[in-house]
Length: 629
Image (spheres, rainbow, N blue to C red):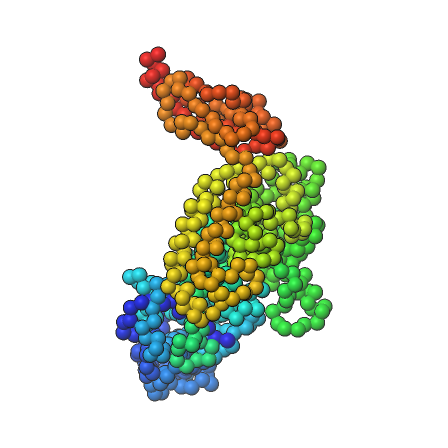
């Protein structure tokens, strides 16, 4: 199945013939007139060969020309979407680099098609798309200019690539998601900066379907980046899918998609060291790795049926089982590339960590879990799952990475469509209640044990205290939802004209809105209820009056707390000691604090052994007032 991805514009202008080829494309001795582009009528293409004593051969089906391909002698008539490939051959039969030119002929009905979103065009020219096999495609990317993008506008990028269907559960839906790889004319990976995102050659075209707001994944990834945890960057686009060649017509429209960075090792994505086949001993073998938890019932081999013994071998090559029974999949190095020594090292590292995690001294900073895990990344990941109540969280599409000589980091997050109330299973629709108690120890790997450490649990509560007033606040979340709903206001109408599912139940929806606005309103209401419920599970941090800043000597500072006993320090240290008792320097708050000198106040509320997050404030006593006294 071929695919054409188009991000559209609002103003109709003459059809543009000039394209901007993918960067680093090979220099060519061929001149095409007219050049690749978008046309409303058939096109007669002339090819000029600048090098004498060569023969130009061409194909129109996306295949690479060889010495049996037709010889170019007369102008070529292009009547529908066509990927013209030309290669010159010398008398001895040696060929030069192939040069590709993609011609898109659109139905007159699309001549004025426009949008506030960008455009990409992918066309497979009759090659059928599948999950297991990658199909060659032409790639045309059109960004927004002056607030609009134009289907007939000049391309930011034009070239070739590969496309295949991706996903697991999502494969059952009629609107498919795709994996896109950009290539050069020699069919080698070619990094390209699609729509302003850092250049790479691996991309995902995610098809929002069960999430009728179409923004939950984007919102989740944005939140992760906002709290300092890399997640895939995204761009909303509109898509046309041309499977059979011919003119690009309104029937090829496929709706709103999200262009997403694929999780992989890259300086602009997961910046870890590259493991080569030679890196089999310490210290190089210690990183970098990306591995994940995911659906274990998926096919383990890229081709259809294979004998059971072969399936077992493929399964062993793709994954390993830890000492605690958790199945992990290799991501990078890829299963076909990771060496036996690297497999053994990573498996041994995980097993040693698990042995220490479940050992008697699991809290020891030198030998326990803190020596193996980046604790803050695990806490942030946990909060992203619980805030959104992601019913796939912790068990599917759950990534980890480890750099050379470093600890295990949790993340990046991935697959956030069944979140923020958009699911019936596992109480996903209920804004109250924790998600994690519904999981077994393999699904909820390591966290039950981690929360047995009172310092880990307090660190978790403290992080809520930071996030609740900032990125996780209702005001912030509502503002971001409104922003993205505004971005999609125009395109969603076209999407739901193509996919008539508003008002219809699509598994696993719990709420079914009759309009796009109702879907957005439900999301906002759910977010507010979820925030309020979570906030009620923790002690509120005390408030200081006046706030931090300069004070006159002798000025009094008040600490206000709703309930419980308040402990504080004046030297910036934590009034809570490791393990949960008050520190040796902590003071019990009995009344207002008169400050005769500058101080860094840290205070917490304590009730029945539980501590609130801390409140911190630095006060500078006015030295002039001190001298006058």
